[in-house]
Length: 277
Length: 284
Image (cartoon, rainbow over all chains, first blue to last red; front, side):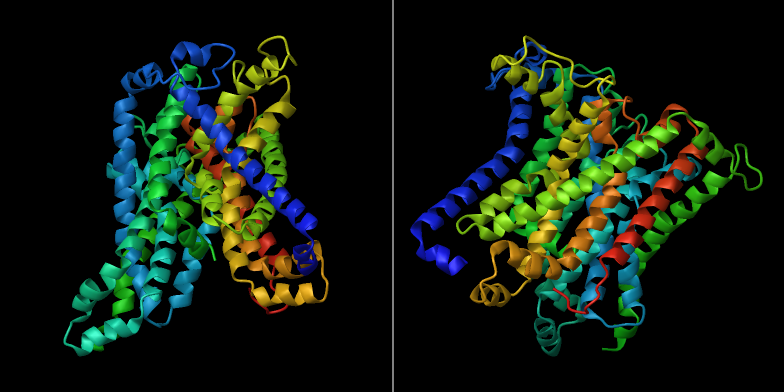
């Protein structure tokens, strides 16, 4: 009926109005709760526990200061960054070569490998932290950033393999072959031709691995004791922490990921679309 | 090139070794731990008996299923509606998509705390309601005495946070459906609803299947949102797993819970693969 509705200005205007209302409603549904969090984080503790709540932020940094100087927060932040950084390096370091192999070669076992990678999604992976607590004590990895990063890498690795595979697939193999005929080695061609073209996409999937780890709660809370990440710290102090601490903590969790995801927003959508096909 | 025969395997080796060590091995280990009695010994079902004998087991199973069976269909409908909206918008669809996918980057714990700011006693819901004169002052909203409100809060927070991932998968899938199909349907006078039902939905089945599997598994893992909004007043499977592992320091019972969640996840994956299997051989 589109043809008719386009000819009829009344129907078209009504349709546009409906779509416009739906767009605004959908955006408000996402943004309003975030706005409330921002108001809480930027108001004084007194206002945060007071009633009624302020509708606009006071731009008072007392809550933020209270959070930042609260015992354990600084180290928790540092641990979160450390674990997420290690996860990022591991996921790309292990995933990109596998992605390249999937994109450039046909070999027996390729579809089996793909299947195993896809299959990992059918498992609640954070649960695998449970047996690792025991294994880690035996190997001295317990309560370390690396130990937790290994678990987070199982979460991020399947995505980084599939994402890099499609990235390399999108770079014409002819470019590489041309370099070989001009005397480049395979490694040389990869470094000088493929890598420069793939770097932005790889960086985007690295950011994705970082965010996966940064946001993970269950495995972090199970595996870290003294060296808790920010999520583990916030979860375990839910019963005792005052509201200003909770909200400033939530804001501290959300802010870096929003900045990161904004930086890679161009890739975000295509990456997720690709990795989940 | 001569090295190409072994090269792909060499490139896959690190990732494969890693998955064996940190996916397969822990998976075997968790099963062993669940069936090994405390202090070692032969195969036993003791941990499962302890798990089922605990009064929180029944509520945890029931609550997790109720939450999943409400949240996932709600999200599917909402994601389909939003994906249609994104496809309809002519100008600045990229901005709309960016805003709608913001929750992708938000952890479940942060989402729980964000909705806590709305639902807690001195929170925004009470502030707005008392500002409008509906209620005289702050009311307790999140309490074990009104369980359905706890459920509603968790459902809202989960739908708010995790619909974005379905949306992205569905929008990617809709982008693959050829425009010509819709044009042809319009020529034959099919309404927008009919076009959605007869073209979009059938051709979107692979994407829908992926999105449903991903979301269902994650829904059975619901944990931090519940912890933030309902504390221990609302038992869920993952929360009980955490309590047995961390609070009671009983890895055996925690492993039994883990095995149960794994079984449910795999069961639902198989169910969804079967229910939404490709019957025609046509792929979008």
